[in-house]
Amino acid sequence: MWMNCLRRKADRKGSSFKVFSRGADKSSLASYIRLFEPMVIKALKQYTVTSDVQLQCRVLLLLSQLVQLRVNYCLLDSDQIFLGFVLKQFEFIEEGQIPHAEELIPRIFYFLVHLSYEKHHSKCIIGVPKVIQLCDGLMASGQSPVTHCIPALVPVVEDVFLVRGTSSASSFDLKELETQREVLVSMLLRLVEYHQVLELLSVVLNESHDSEERWRRWSRQVVDTLLPLLAQGRVRLESRAAQHSLQRVLTSVAPCVLRPVDSLLRTLFSEVSLVHSTTVAMERWLGMVLAILLLLISQGKEEVVLARLEELDLCLPFTSSLERHDPLNVAATMPKCKQQPPEQIMARFLMQVLGLVSNHIHCSVYSPLAGEESLYLQEQFSHFLLYCIYMFESGSYCRVATAVMQMVQQGKEMGRDPNSCLPIDDINSLFLELAPKCPMLMFKWCYLLTLVNFSDQTFWAQILRTQPHDLILEQGPVQAESCGPSPCINLEVVRKLGTILYCDYVCENMNDAKQLTWLLVNHIQEVVSLSSELPRTGTYCCCT
Image 1: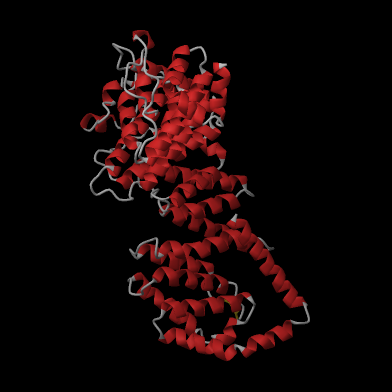
Image 2: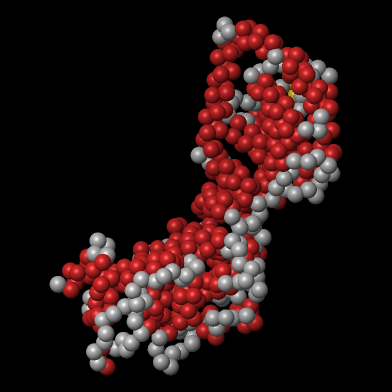
């Protein structure tokens, strides 16, 4: 969106220049600008004698505006003393001796980019290669890329990829422009772990559609550089903006470079050690899982993905880590990959993510030093649960959903085979303990359980706050009573949402009269009190 805005601004800028050059008011405009000449000269001198970064930024902004209005810069700085001073500042910037450099650097580069269009005696005052060289110097200075190099690259990339080359130019200029673009792409790829650079790369890829060969080449370079870093957990995905930037750049690449899905599956199943991992490491890993999983859901078909998974013979990650630190005993339920069909491998991977992340969130929220550090991880986990819900409910991954359903059901049977079941009770225990802290995570987990036909009354009795008594009707009459509202608002939210979900599950499984009877005997008041809910309305129809 902001890219189109830049293009519109550039078009308006070009049209306004044409109007001024053709109109009769050009001389009038020049006379008005000359009125400000003494102030501009004073501003240039003030820039060279002050250390006030805010003042210097305003002076650079003023000069950028004047240059865009086609004011002859050489009349203001005929000996290029001011330009020399600005270029001299880079020695101090690279040494980290100028405070608030992240504010000054983008203003300097916006000024230099606009100045690159100006000429002095038919020679460019400063060329784009020199501007790119200054960016490279900042990259090699050892200063933080977030405060130094990336703010410098933003105006250069916007100009070289969005503005230049849009008008008529000679073949030599176009060839030089292509060289400059290639250099900038290579510089961006060196900083691809930062989400600001991912945002710039998505702009570059979207603007390269006019050349199919160039779009594919740059897409291949981006994918080949980005996926290994994602697998190593080096891409900084600990914020919502970073996740959105990653998603945008992955959707901007040419689809052909992601086919077949081998590279995506290798990244998804890459071996990563999460033993005693920090929240940041978990956020980066889960961010990678979300990005890859969304691509597989949106662009891949289940039969293709599972066929490639079987062909690649990939194993579940974290096996060695879980042997040392396995709170859910998942390692005991992991057979060799060759003994499993691909849908079971994918199903077990999804459940493994659920177990690992829920355990980490549980440790974070119940830590004596608990703060807000896990809030974004909870948001990521919520999105992951939504992805799983979509996969199972839409039917796009029905084989995986069926595999999860079978393993969940087998996990509740006596004498279960550890190679074909999931530790569902352990995961349920974690989510039940998270309910007072994270009610929406508990709700989405319950929703997921209804999709795989998980009807264990012991679990649902804890969700719906059923009075403890014998749940099997054949053992005798039971007391039709529930515990009622919870004094904890989060648990009350879980209770009401859980009742809605269970009603929906009963409506979808009318052949199971036991579940319907259990619901009506124990929770008839709750069902009546929220009769406006559609699942409950369906329950009434079933009862009548």
